[in-house]
Image (cartoon, rainbow over all chains, first blue to last red):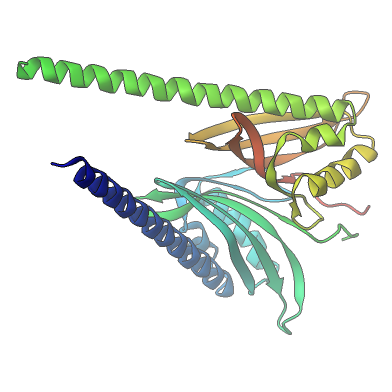
Length: 152
Length: 152
């Protein structure tokens, strides 16, 4: 094979590999955005068990004002407390998703609205997602509120 | 070359590759723990510029009770406010470090102690580190407090 042919083939292979990587990254982002929509839908139903089912079997949630919740049962309790406050409208917006094989990081913002559409609270999150049994699930999840602390 | 020799060499290569991966992961963990110690040392000096210098040039900090701080200048302001409250004793404990090439995730706990050694506040963090110009730096940083909200 001529040297020029080898160069062309190598470049073509690099372009294909790059395209595959970009396509895979877009797939991960779409899967995570679908996961976040499923999260919001479970909150809308007040269904803490469905929220917990979106996490991996060894997940950890790191809620404000609480210790690390390890495993789905502990995570379900955290979100039972959350939906018990009456929250039904939670929006999750991914700003930045980075995929690294079966791990992905997801940085975004969240907002809670009342029945009248007014924003009651808002903040940020970082979630580490893992592909478990072919499904992208929340594996490590931390969030906080951007609103100043006020007296309860 | 005999087939058995090829198998042995392949297995040997896999073992070496595995050992290199483990060693690299330990290097990343050590670099991140050193970074966290440098962070605590800068807090002890009340030096917000030194804290900001531990972040990448395009870093984002996601503080509780504040919006996303983008870039070192904004991050320095966040930590100037933090050291201005008088905090000098911050401990950062990495519980889980995962390396993915030039990216690493770091989940851990933090504690703030007063001059008498009593814990004033404690919480959790997730930091996404990036290797920038050969140096591991904080790239995305979110934390919250585990203490219940009380009236200010």
